[in-house]
Amino acid sequence: MSSKMLSAKSGDTDAVTRLAVLIDAENVSDRYTQYIFEELAGYADLITYKRIYGDWTTGRLNSWKKVLLDYSITPIQQYSYTMGKNSTDSALIIDAMDILYNGDVDSFCIVSSDSDFTRLAARLREAGKCVIGMGEKKTPKPFISACQIFRYLEIISREEQSVENSESDLNDIADEVQRIVDEFSDDSGWVFLGSVGNQLEKKLPDFDVRNYGFSKLTALIKATKRFRIESRQSGDAAPLTYIGNK
Picture 1 (cartoon, rainbow, N blue to C red):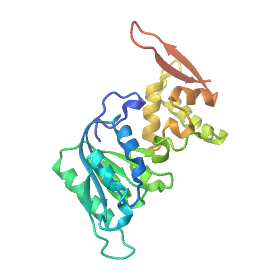
Picture 2 (picture 1 turned 90 degrees about the vertical axis):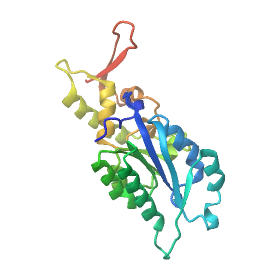
Picture 3 (picture 1 turned 135 degrees about the vertical axis):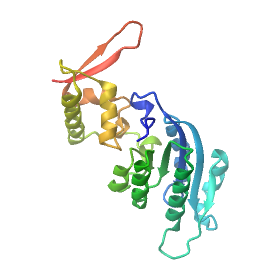
Picture 4 (picture 1 turned 30 degrees about the vertical axis):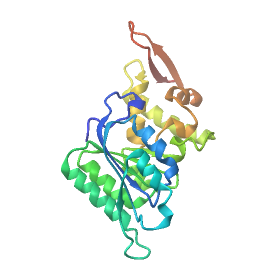
């Protein structure tokens, strides 16, 4: 497993260095492009590959063409040889394996809402690569679970400006946080909030505080009303936040 796989946004400053971005044009709208690369800026120092797959001889992908130039994304032509079969999936998978064996990236971002990439994500992780998935909320759970990190396109693009936080949703997260605190707290019952965030991402690939309408993990924790929160100052360094079970 790569040592450079966790998001700097969850408190880990060791961001991914080299990333391959592979986009399924048949399953993703071009309107998300800006937000995809803005989001990836928090994970990667260098995007080595930017490729997008589809049948560019058809008119339905015309809206992508200007976007490809603006973001320097390489289009990969894949004809639909058989009606009802998505050959784009095969082309993306073959390219991903070629890139894997080239050995010049640390991580992959697969942008699609298609469950057909589940085995690919699992195989890349078996090879020690971080896999970031991005797709719409309709994305099947198996593909989400196969990724190390998964981000919903509607959330990162801010198309959903308000998120209804049901009590059951917050309780589910609170239950998971409580288990993490129980497992990782020190003798006095406290655990560093950054460690909690890292553990949540490990256990729940699609965990993102923005899914619940918050911008910070601290605000989400406060909203559950189930934890003690303490800010600790050490010298001139920025204060660190710790939490404990009530």
